[in-house]
Image (cartoon, rainbow, N blue to C red; front, top):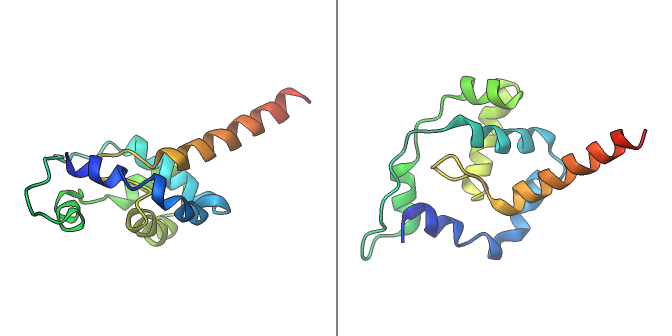
Length: 120
């Protein structure tokens, strides 16, 4: 199992963490922006006896918050405050992907918004 696979394995158990994005538009934008960011990291196999949390810290790329802010449409200061929360909650991953349940919520909201526009 790779480190990112290990991190993603916790998604189903941690649905309560989705409350961090439910009413926070900037958090949603940052989460989507992270999927556009395309970090350069090297995921690797989790070593025998290696702790997942410690291994994950080693592969997280250095984040250019100015770039992430620009991609997300979120103020730089907000990106600095919110992104670490998303990271610690396991809603974004070091390979530039995001929690699939969080993305489903966002897709649903966007779909509902589009449907509302079409009905007008």
